[in-house]
Structure formats: structure tokens, C-alpha cells
Image (cartoon, rainbow, N blue to C red; front, side, top):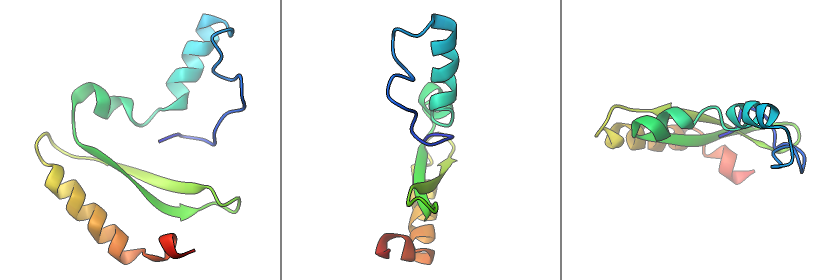
Length: 87
């Protein structure tokens, strides 16, 4: 999950100065690292579209070993918003 639209080609190039590149990487995928580092279950759900037809998503995290709750929430949200997939 990204906190913004996809950056232009070269934005994350290894030719960029390290400090700039590091800052860009930490801003690029700013929602998933916590789940990756802690091993907590997480799920990303597409919920809507922007005027440019880009997906807008939410990310949910759960307690360790409680993947089931996340899946139940995902199924519930999908049942309430089937229009997203029908557009």
C-alpha cells in the first residue's frame, strides 16, 4: 500500500543521493513496514476508485495469530461494497 500515487520512473533510482533515496523509500510504502517488522497479520482492501480510476484502499492489522478476524472483516466489507468490483 502506498500513501500516494505511483512515482515517476527514476524517483527511486539508485543514482539518487542516499539521503534523498532513503527518505523517498520511507515515504513510498509507509503502511506495510510495521506489519512486516512485527509479523502481525495485515490485509489491504480496495474500497473505492479515484476520479482517475485508481484504487483507494485501507489496510487493517490484527493481533498475532488472529488472522481469522481480519478475514472476517474483509469478507464483511466486500459483501457491503460489491459495487467496487462491478464497475
